[in-house]
Length: 343
Ligand code: KG4
Ligand code: ZN
Image (tube, rainbow, N blue to C red; front, top):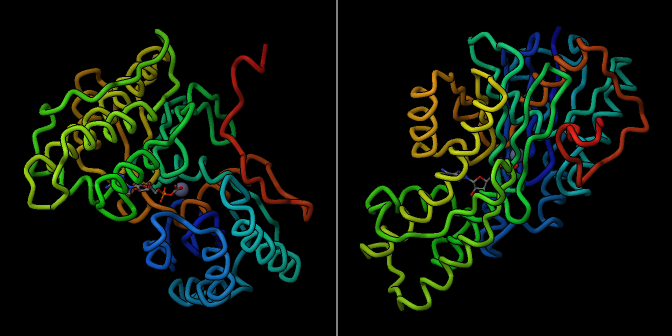
């Protein structure tokens, strides 16, 4: 079955054709990121206008690159949350129109679940249950993945997402937007043990995260050290390396502890921050020591894309899930049911 995936939750407009959930025939992505840079963050109106301008073109490119046509598509999968309301509505509206006019089923996909699914789009067998970790600009979530349509929430951030902490830190350091890639680059030349930034482990046994403390600590450090903010500055490299390490220490500890507590041997990691090579190396090291297999998406699938939406949509469809035309944007959609809700 050919699935057309559509993703418009934030600043990427993406369309992808995927065969049977794993075989990616196309994955076209147009991004408005450059238009937001001068504002230091995503501006919803700009993102929405950009989606409107290019969605039709991106879908056509997605079909052309896959050498296919509308009449060969068997399912439309679209992100319906979380994300920017207006941006989500653009993808949902065109998905509904296509589903109706082509008389094919429609399925709404949770963007966070799609990020976890992106780590399943390798040729590696997934052994449910396993642990899923989403580390992105808007979310930091740890779940137990019991099946393609069964996810239990273990923990999530109580304030900033880890990608958001990188973006805010980069703003303080005058390194531009988005912060993650540039902090990773600056950190390469720095000493991760130079500055002891705080690590918020929260209550014993908690899988929740908090990154607002480390972000504020960086702000005070820069102010008090009267740091010269030039990219040739050795101290700046140390700040970036130490900040990155403080964030990743907590993420790696909690993700591996979750695998140990749940007695699960596979860890799936997705979201924009999962492209970070230091995070990947730290997770691989710790996972190896505990006999856990850690899976990352291919690079192109780490940040927002429609292939993961098409793939996840196919799996949900096979589990009997289907959306109707009342499908609406859910900007604050969470991931998974909380075990406390089940009692
Ligand atoms: O998943 P994504 O594309 O969008 C959301 O769903 O939020 O993630 C974007 C986030 C941004 O905060 C960006 O700074 C971060 O991912 N990011 C990184 C790296 N590349 C992107 N963070 C750390 N290291 C990176 N190499
Ligand atoms: Zn995302």
